[in-house]
Length: 332
Image 1 (cartoon, rainbow, N blue to C red):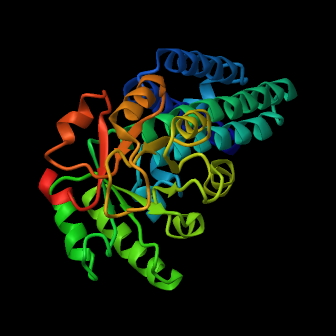
Image 2 (cartoon, rainbow, N blue to C red):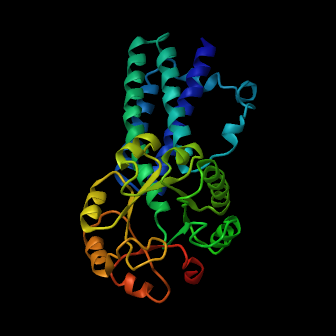
Image 3 (cartoon, rainbow, N blue to C red):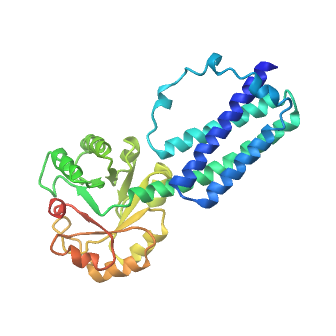
């Protein structure tokens, strides 16, 4: 029985520790009072059920951390976390796994306690979904908090080797970049996208793939930017999942309204001015941009012919973010 109580002791600690980490994320990262309070209350529920395990005095008495064969085991997956979301995933999983262990072994001392732990486990599943979605929204907004969106297009910038230009842009502090090349063969595009993605990660920047949803998924890019003739945002979301950023280009008020209600995370409006990048596209103008900004509840990116000479005029519409290609170095 002592060994069973060692299992109880270890998993009570594991469940409460995992939930405490999640609570700290909701409290200090998300700053969500409702979620934080809910998790605090749930931890109290877990403690209350744990205290119904018979012979409570054994839980501390039989503890022997020095002889625990699992103490020194520290896999590489535990040594590093990629981001806050990975910390959340690891610790909410730790809590559910610990509750499952408590559920199974408590059946040896009291079947009723096993049922109580099962109820708690299913409550954590609901909690996991709610916190996860809140975290995804928060992290996307963090990535979308930028001023300048630079599009890396080798033909537009007149450079075959785009890596030095990309490194220069990132070194200057740009935090949001997109790779676009309408003429590159798919293998070439994939190779360049992988290289740019590597640079973006090194500089802590967000990297968006233009058009190619499957390539975005393949290289684990931060997201994809779609045109009006590309894959529908709903389908792109099904492929990429909720964590990735999806943007779309709009060229009219009607398209902007549709994008504002769709599953995209941001939408570009333009071209604001006539541009050599897409000379066939009619400029939508400042007035349309102003109308779009006034109705949007998602980030709006002004794009098309924006330069250091006209950017103040663009900003007077209320738009906070602009996308550029040729003018990137001039605006830094």
